[in-house]
Length: 223
Image 1 (tube, rainbow, N blue to C red):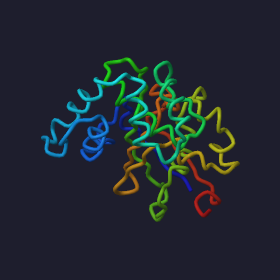
Image 2: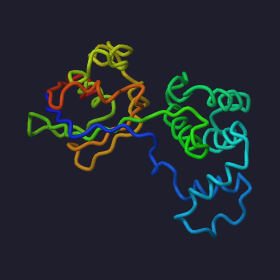
Image 3: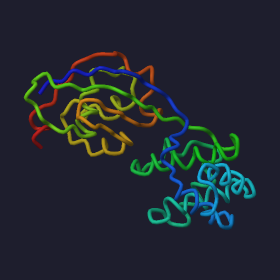
Image 4: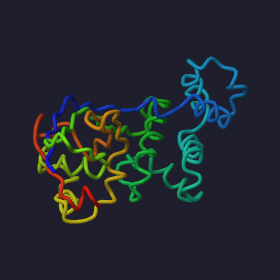
C-alpha cells in the first residue's frame, strides 16, 4: 500500500506547554506548600508554581515533580537517582525505559524553565505533514508504527531511529518501540498529521526530503 508524504514544517521546541494542565499546576503548588492555589487566577498558575519551586533546592524540587508524575511507576530510590542525574545530564534522552522518556522530558523542561537553566535542556521535534494514500479507496487508520515506517524513505541515513531499528523500519521485524518513539500523533482526518518526538531521536536536519513516497506491506496493514 503506497503513500505520498509531504512535510509542511519541522520545528524544534524546548517545551510543550499544553502538556501541563491547570489541574497539574494547582496540585503541584500544593506539593510545594503554596496554599489555596485553586483560588488563584488560572493565567498566573504557571508563574506561581515557578515562584514556589524556587524556594526549594533543585534536587528536592525534582523529587517532588518526579513523584507527582511517576510515583506509580518508579521506586523512591529510582526517583532520587533520577533527580540527581537530571542536574548533570538529559536523563530523558537516555533513560532505558523508553515509555518514560516523554514524561521525563516534560518534567525536565518544567524544572529547566523554573530554575532558569540549572537543569540541562532538552528539545522535542514537531513535524506537521500530510500522508496521502495513492489508492484513493484506501481507508486504513495509520498508527505510530505505520507512520514511522512510511518515514523511512524521507530520513537521512544518519538518523538514530533508522540506525537502531533498521529491521523494524524496513518492515522485517515487529516494532513495539514505535509507540514510545513517537510521543504524540495527532490527526483529525487521517491525512494531516502532527508528530511529536524527541529531538535526540529525530533532528530537523535529518528530515532529508520535503516530499517522498513510502509503502506499507500487507502484513503491517492487516496485522
